[in-house]
Image (cartoon, helix red, strand yellow):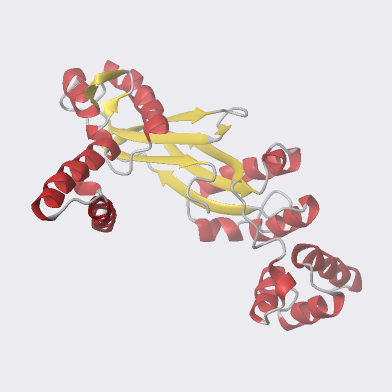
Amino acid sequence: MSQKKILENIKRLREITGVGFKDCKLALDENSGDIEKSIEFLRKKGIAKATKKMSRTAAEGLVLVHEESNELAIIEINSETDFVAKNKDFIDFCKQLAEINFKVKGDLNKLNDFKMKNKIKVKENLISLISKIGEKITIRRTYFIDKNNGKNFFYVHSALEKNIGKIIAAVKLNDIKDSTQEDFGKKLAMHIAATSPIAIDKNDIKKEILDKELEIIKEELKNSGKKGEMIDKISNGKINKFISENTLLNQKWIMDPEKNVKEIIKALNPALKILDFERFKVGEGID
């Protein structure tokens, strides 16, 4: 590696971590010039400033969807501020990642090692972007929906431009070649964006989620002075309400709250089935 490249890497590492020249050079020497490994090396050494940028919260950013041949790939990339989320360099980076994410079918590990248009890996370009912009930027999560046995639909909320926004919802319906499917699929994606279901139906909710919710409900009832059988009775009602409000088929249809999604599907075509869905909202769940 040339002396110029070594000095560039030291500069980048110092900008990201806030650590002095000598420690950055040592970290790079110990890790064959790999900046990501050098950051980890500095953190393990306990140098406080090593987490200067990387420990800050990045809860702004963008979600993007890429669609080809009835297959969808969704990705969330976070920044610390909404100002950076509107930065041209950041947006261009995100657009490339959306295309790569589709190529690797939502595999985050493969995405990080994929070479971008400049022939440099994503993870290295990410570090350069952090250094240039001066904010923590993270590639948070990805999702891929294939075309097997179904038809895919998506909706972008608060769109910055085509297929880029703050919320993206996607849904896969079984392909029944019915004229009502197209319109319903688009509306269902909008419904998912608005209501944020956690599962298709009751049996699809993870047991630990229900157990935790029940624990919270019972603790609240105990603290309010309820006892024994009354706690069990009220808890059952509350957990059933939680299931109805958070499972897609049992949610009230946003375009006709008198009916739930299951009833809407039955009226349209009983053969119609929801096979998969996903919803990404920028920063959701980040503390």
